[in-house]
Length: 161
Ligand code: UDP
Ligand code: MG
Image 1 (spheres, rainbow, N blue to C red):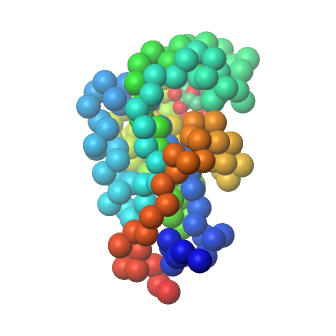
Image 2 (image 1 turned 45 degrees about the horizontal axis):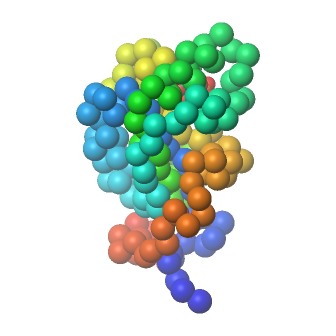
């Protein structure tokens, strides 16, 4: 059996993170990736894509009917998005902490949206809001073979055995 992580399977949590078109256009790709990377999370998938409107609707299906839905869908499909999967202990919940509140007016300084964004419709980043959405979003954006299996050298320094 290949050992790709010292973490128990249940702790090897994964979340879907996307840098939205505003983050890409504003040159914030490395800035945003840096924050997940330096925390100690492990990148397991990454690609640059321009989602179609239909795909953007699927991604935001739970928000259909909201007044901002069409604008949100059109914006997500307006340009390149960096789609990623990050892995680590508690990454779903803590990833949302790194991202900050939905409206940058309320996001704390030190968070991605708090430091890098001003308005709710241009808040630079998406992150899954729970385990079910994380699984669904990873499956929507990535084929299973696009998730890369490898051992992170840093892991033994990040986690106790
Ligand atoms: N959004 C918006 N206006 C609103 C609420 C949300 O434009 O009043 C956008 C915003 O970009 C947000 C996205 O819709 O990131 C998805 O909304 P959600 O409530 O899921 O927020 P998130 O999970 O991204 O924090
Ligand atoms: Mg959400």
